[in-house]
Length: 165
Image (cartoon, rainbow, N blue to C red; front, side, top):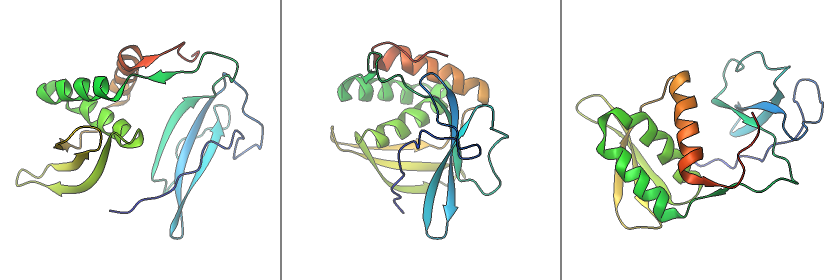
């Protein structure tokens, strides 16, 4: 497995160099640059879709430094919710998203990926905050499901005022 250090949001549009203000929606893209991965942030107005060769992209809202800070639920709560999602075959895409979130939050560590006899790729994760390992099917959600999962996670796992849409 390869680890990359991804820089924080530049707070500036890559295309227009306009500063992103609190409440602005923006898109971030990870692009290969030789042996490195670089982040590019785009204002909503300058976004024309992910560039060719992009590794991944996501949409976010620039936080207001004066507003209440969003805090994630305690790790045990997040793990409990994740383990519930794993029990429901209809929630595999949500379990995949929460697994990635937990890697970012350093609750679990991505140990390996494997492809089973069924042809399904799985992430092999090891618990850092709770003993055990998990094998999570890679099930990328549809655009509609991404919004549903995001809303569900915001209501269940975050505290504080949600960002304005």
